[in-house]
Length: 246
Image 1: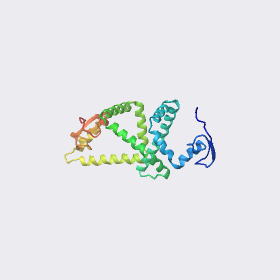
Image 2 (image 1 turned 180 degrees about the horizontal axis):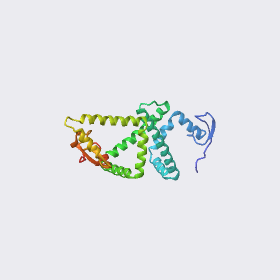
Image 3 (image 1 turned 45 degrees about the horizontal axis):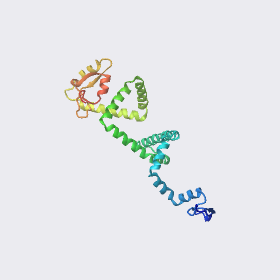
Image 4 (image 1 turned 45 degrees about the vertical axis):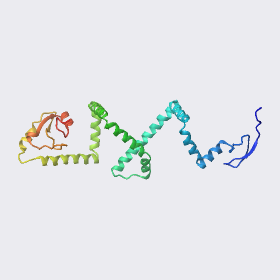
């Protein structure tokens, strides 16, 4: 025969209320009291830490993640996090420009700083691989060759260079080029011949320096022998490099 359970009078550790139980190990009158007590003493965190290391918890997590509710919650959470990260990035840009940010913005940036750092690290690792850099170049070429995207970029450039920052950038670039052009003019430069070359430039072509004035490894001179006609596309893609440089 099984042993007969006897009722025991006990006092709750949390609320000090009297309660009757048939279990000698029971310390709380209600589950709520048990949770409150564990929160107060800090034992709840410890027990949760231990539980999260178990296989049962991992199984439960996986099952919830694959469930309908879990997928909806995960996509919603990811969307909210990404919105906050974008906001943190814009705050960071303001800070780098030397603009003032308020306390709330500073707190938001500090909160999502780890996310920004991890994203930047992942992007650097991805771009450092030769395979991915080739992929990116091909994708960029495809994107910028599309007439719709060309229009978009033209509108963006027009908008940017009309701002104070854009005007300052454009002036700095033009002044740098003007200065390098003046430094590249030597005693045997034939200004009249150069003027003729610029004047007789065919439509849709640019006058280009064969050895660029602001090259990375070499800088050319502003002389008539160093000038050539290139199509607008060729000249823009060439930039400040020699035509046969890779």
